[in-house]
Image (tube, rainbow, N blue to C red; front, side, top):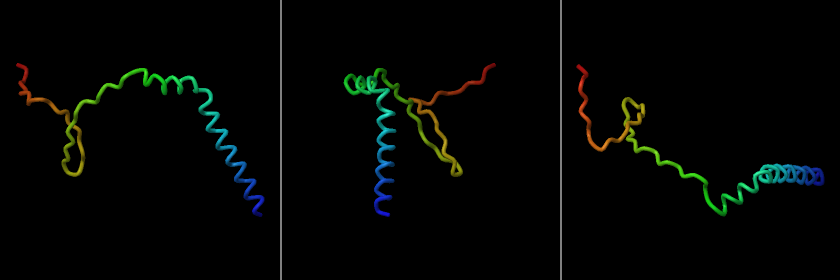
Length: 74
């Protein structure tokens, strides 16, 4: 019984290792390029938001530098 468990573990280990290698191998050039040069593009920062809660529901509101008065169009 212990031999069967050992064989099953070895088989599962080989399948897992093969899946990892099979995933990484096709993209090895891109992975090496990213490790050596860093990302190819920069990520734009997200706008600041303020989280408010009313009745237990969380809303996102944009943070503005100052309050802008609203005028009705005539």
